[in-house]
Length: 160
Image 1 (cartoon, one colour):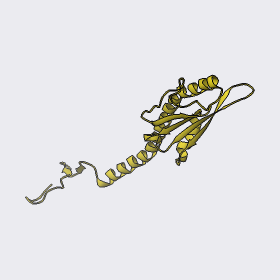
Image 2 (cartoon, helix red, strand yellow; image 1 turned 180 degrees about the horizontal axis):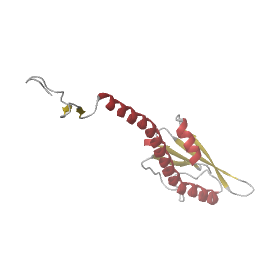
Image 3 (cartoon, helix red, strand yellow; image 1 turned 120 degrees about the vertical axis):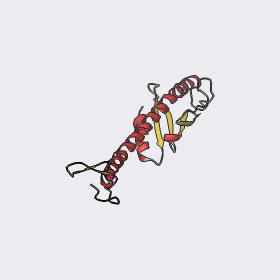
């Protein structure tokens, strides 16, 4: 308890009858510990979240190319070669863009998709090859990016 007019207890402490002090609020050390825990959790969560978003964006890219693949396959059976299988051909859709795709083009049967936002710097090329015995078309995927993690995710997503 204060003994004189100018003697006050600190603003964050209250004195009770028994002379014991009860603290109100948090100490600097407690706040620093909380900040350290939040920082560690953030350092773990943010990369995981970014990986999740990239996988979702790659799934969007995969869904976008389905009509292009079908169009190239139809074009191949109609024209008997890939030479005329380009964007805008009767069976191949015109260019497309979306949140994660800046452009989709088809040239001589090859589908080229350029990513944006979470897929920025990624260019995915799908090249068709036809088995001469069975006539089945197989697709080879090339994922081109400097980001190795994104490249691996792209290769996992575009397994045909």
